[in-house]
Length: 84
Image (cartoon, rainbow, N blue to C red; front, side, top):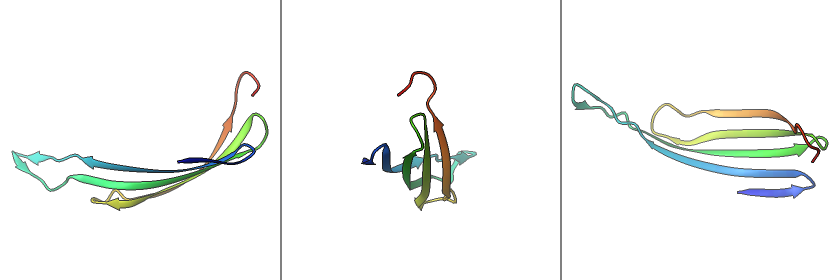
């Protein structure tokens, strides 16, 4: 879900779910199926006509295996070519 928050400012919320990845050794199934869900947030802030800064955060909501994590990011975006 993305929302326009003001002049050139926007924010987004996203989710994902994944599942799969069973294995077997010598024909014996292992209990190593992965599954999980994640939540992400993004806020984009304009600097000028050609540049913006995006702030991101994401986290695991549920993880069946040890693949849970938290991430944050700062992204500088520059528009090349024709003026906006």
